Each structure stands twice: as structure tokens, then as C-alpha cells.
Image 1 (cartoon, rainbow, N blue to C red):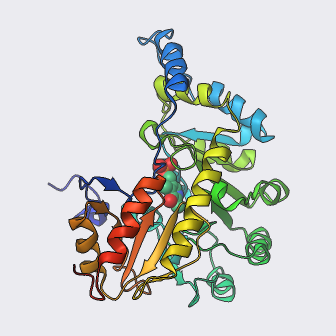
Image 2: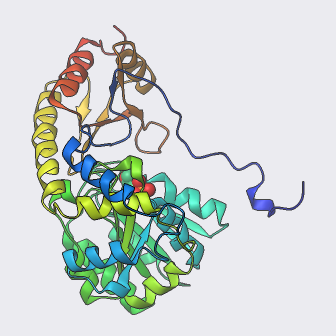
Image 3: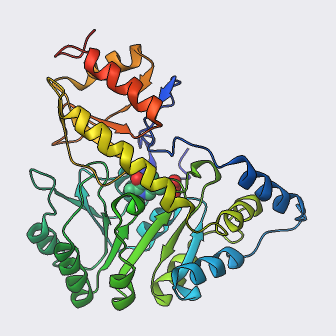
Length: 352
Ligand SMILES: *Cc1c(COP(=O)(O)O)cnc(C)c1O
């Protein structure tokens, strides 16, 4: 078959494998489902819609609500079924892609599927922002720099001065700095002011983490009207399903919901972090997200030992610089207790 572009041949598929487990801490999901009363309201809203009709062309109803709630121009909001699709569209639009390493894998994956020139700059030893190296990499043809803040999969939070320096440089050199704020409710950070003052900065946000709505697929871009218009053209028309819109319009009537849920997760994260500081052979990194990165003497053994005890986490040891590392999502208090019990039951190579 020769119908497809040669760069797509033999491309490995997205690095995720579904595994069942009693305690599922592998996808940075919210441990709690939407409350039944809210679900019911969303279902009633959905039932009242004509399902034979297409939804809004570009989710105008949801964008209007978001624009109002966030104090952002309507023309600068792009909705999509998951921010992953927006990452893809941004990559498709970009001359080239600049990333940090390690980083959220979908930036590099999208660069591969789009045959976009791609470079990644290693984080510092304690996962600091490699500012000078990034500024150096921004010489030459401008493109899109993806920066998760707080950072995934390290959980680190970069100092604002570095992010602001990148934004200034982007404005001078024609780059677009995309700050991926997937986890911002867990760090209490918000780069809207920077993005408002600098059209070379755009923000990516998702309903998959603090909002606890990974299953309904919704994310959005906050950008200048010019950037938003270009990205909107790369998102399919009628792309946000009516059911997703109905659920979003319902939860957006409860603006404090995500913040409250995030606060509970942050308290559990702190409890887990302090407990893990006492682990005899693991070290835990400070986190500003809903997950913790831990370094173990042997990631494969630790992963297997946890799995034997019904606890599923995510291996991260395939990344350069993350040798021995596992990523653990913050769950419910009971799930976190199960994880801690399993973690402390492992000996230094990870086995029981
Ligand atoms: C989870 C996550 C996303 C969200 O992707 P969706 O497609 O909206 O579910 C985006 N960026 C980062 C860094 C993430 O960790």
C-alpha cells in the first residue's frame, strides 16, 4: 500500500497499554466520578436536545460560557474533544516543534505523525527549566514551543521568571509559546495574564484532570484571535459532540467544582509525599500536580511488586533522566493507603 506518506510507515503507536487493576493510579485521572446530581442534570440537558441535528459548528455555546467565566475574548477560545487534538492541530500548523525532555509524549508523537521538525531540550538535574538552551534552540526559523506548567511527567513547577523570559523571546523572534496548563488547578498557577499581554503565548487546558471528566473528552485553547482562527481551521467542523457540550454546560454552572476537587487532591498529594519521604529505597520528587514521580532502584521490579498487590502505576523509566522512575496518580485516601502499604512492603529491589 503506497497511498500514505512514507513517514507514517512503521510508526510505533501511542505509548499506552490498558491494564485492569483494583487500584488504578496510572492515568492521572480524578479518583472520583462527577456527583450523581450533576450527572442527572447533564443527562436531562442531553435528552432535551434533538440528536438528529448537528451540534454547534465550533462549540459556540460552550466557548461563550468559557469566555465569560475566564474573562477571555470569545474569538480566542478553541474547543476540542480533548486537548490532545489541539496539540495535534498546533503541531500541524507549526514550522517546527520545540519541547522539553522528558515531556508529555503527545507533543513528540504529533511531531512524528505530522513529519514536523522536532527538537527537545533536557530539563536540569532537578527538573529545572533549561532556559538558556531553549533560548538557543529558538534561533532560526520560528515554530511552536510546548511547555507544560506545571510540568509533566516530572510534576515540577518552573519559576515564573523563566517562563516570562521565554514569552518575551517568543514575541521578539516570532515563536508561539504554548503553556499546557493541564494541571494548573493543582499548582494554583494561571498564565492567563501573561497570555493576555502577549499574543505569542497561548494556553492549553483540559477537563480531563481537575474537572474529573477524562471520559467525555474536552479541552480548549486560550489564544489571540489570530492564533485561535488558524488553529480552529485545523479542528474538524462540528467537532465537539452534543453530549460533551451538554455535560460541559452543566458543570460550568458550578465554577468552584474543579478548584474544590483539586484542593482535596492536593491535601492527599502532600500526605503521600511526606509518607514517601520515609521510604527506605525510593525517593520522591516534589509535585505541583495530581501525581507523584518516584525513583526506585528498579522500575520493572517495583511496578510488578505493586501490581501483585493490585496497584497499577505508570512506568517512566523509558525516559532519559528518569531511570528507575514510576509515576503515581493521587487517588482517594483509601487508594493512596493501598499504594503506600504496597510500596512499603517491597524490599529494595522491589520484590515482596
Ligand atoms: C492529561 C494531559 C493533557 C490532557 O489531554 P486531553 O486530551 O485533554 O485529555 C494534556 N496535556 C498534558 C500535559 C496532560 O498531562
